[in-house]
Amino acid sequence: MTTRARPAGDFDYEQHGAGYASVRRPDRRIAARVQVALGADRTVLNVGAGAGPYEPADRDVLAVEPSAAMRAQRPVAAAPAVDAAAEHLPFDDDSFDAAMAMFTVHQWG
Ligand SMILES: C[S@@+](CC[C@H](N)C(=O)[O-])C[C@H]1O[C@@H](n2cnc3c(N)ncnc32)[C@H](O)[C@@H]1O
Figure 1 (spheres, rainbow, N blue to C red):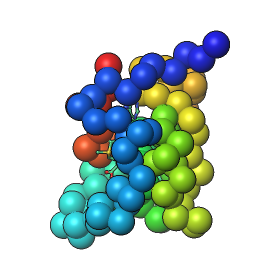
Figure 2 (figure 1 turned 120 degrees about the vertical axis):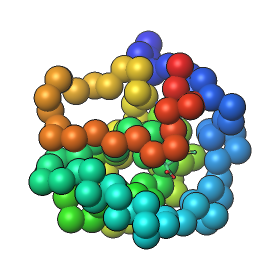
Figure 3 (figure 1 turned 90 degrees about the horizontal axis):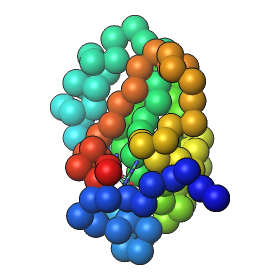
Figure 4 (figure 1 turned 180 degrees about the vertical axis):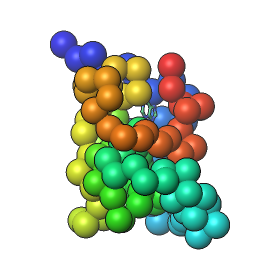
């Protein structure tokens, strides 16, 4: 039995997400805002991470991504990704300094 919720948004990334990372490119202005928002936080959970285009390379990041098709598009050097969903995060409270979620909340249940 899984505790993972089915993605609830307007798009099925598992079925149709292949190739997503080839057209999803980070904008450096948004990346800069992410850095400012994270401040001095060192450990970061990225929920609904996809291929992780805005994951900061200078921090200890763990990704959460329920779609295997999306996890498969993460670069080899990207942070590790856990098969889980926002509705049932398999972590204790206060396990991370910060959490981020880019362009994914609309997909959550
Ligand atoms: C538009 S993509 C954005 C991916 C990445 N954050 C980015 O900025 O490129 C939305 C992502 O949310 C994920 N997602 C869908 N439902 C989710 C859920 N319930 N919990 C966590 N992630 C979910 C999808 O699998 C997909 O990878």
